Amino acid sequence: MSFAPLISRYDGAGLSAGTDWTGVAYIHDRQVCGSGVLLASGLHLLTAAHLVDAFNLENGVAVFETAGGVFAREIMSVAAYPGWLINESGVWHDLALITLKQAAPMAVERYGLYSGSDELNRTVTPVGYGQAQNIYGEELFESQVNRRVGENTIDALGSSLERFGWQGSLDCQLCFDYDDGTAAHDSLGQLLGSSHLGLGGSEAMLTPGDSGGGLFIEQNGDRLLAGINSFVTRYAPADLTEAIDSSVGDIGGATRVSSYLRWIEEETGQLQTPVTKSNTPPDDGEVARQVAEGEGVWFLVQLSTNATQQASVDFVTRDGSALAGQDYIPTRGTLTLAEGERWAKIWVQTLADNLIEGDETFYLSISNPVGAAFPGGRTELTAMRTIVDDIHLVGVTHLVPELFG
Image (cartoon, rainbow, N blue to C red; front, side):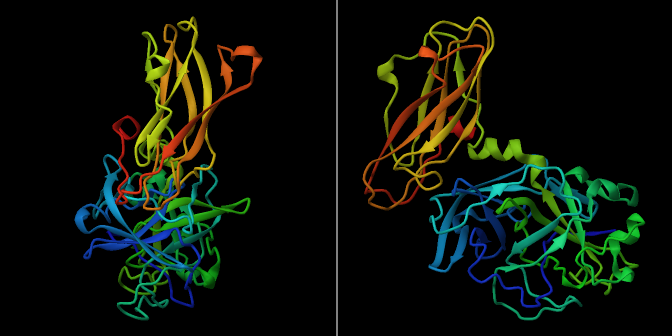
């Protein structure tokens, strides 16, 4: 079984997303092109590592199509998951994170991450900028780039296919085949010895250009990102054609987002390890209450004396007049002080734009103290920061090493 290191796309039966799914972007550097998915920060996109392996950052752009117009954002950096690889033998950790120079407009949809482990047999929605094809793998049109959406079901995890010679990070792969409602073309059903017809003739498959696009699960009315489109391969006995061409019988794979939550959260600043110290805390006057937009700012959390046991608090950012994903990157987590430690810094990254908005505020709240207590029996403490508007900005957001490693 061989793998095509390209990501592919749907049967073209009217599968145009129009102005919906605006947070699935068209990614290109004037040569390489594919898809990416905007995360809650508005500044980061997940995509496939193989798509951006040789990406030219000088020309790198993410394009968002909305009902109100088309918006392009320059790409500042790309970080591939450590150890990623895709070759003729298999696929390993095909995931990368794109950081934009400026946050996407608020009109563009942001997507949360699916953290469950029950993807198997779930109906999923693949979205991307692949080439429209019919069920025989023939292109329906050329050169036109459109965002399209379809449906399929997760028929297997990659780990269940290891005995057939599959290699790679198999526990981290969501697999689905292109069914037409017949057992003869049910690739994964034949491989695994049980029927996996899924949605039958209404299923969609990946085609070139869908690399880095999203595989979504709906939960409580929210669209959550469960996978990043990664590869298409074939199972000869069930495949309608003799090529890896996104025809009926082909098998698609996506990188399972829930396997990489900690890496994603650490890279985007959604989850951070606060800077801790055991010596004397900074003076109150050293704690900046204002920050220029686009810069990082820190909050000081301290005990009255060094901890005599491990102590922890939960922290979360909250909107004031500044909005999460537009003016700052929202962050949450748990801060832990070891025995003997007294204080810690929690960093928050603000975002730059070219709008004249005036100064804006946001908050960081800490709650649920364990091993320590808040003064006066309070259950929550909150501090405010002011983002100072800078009308001279050119749209570049400065990232601080304390937050992004």
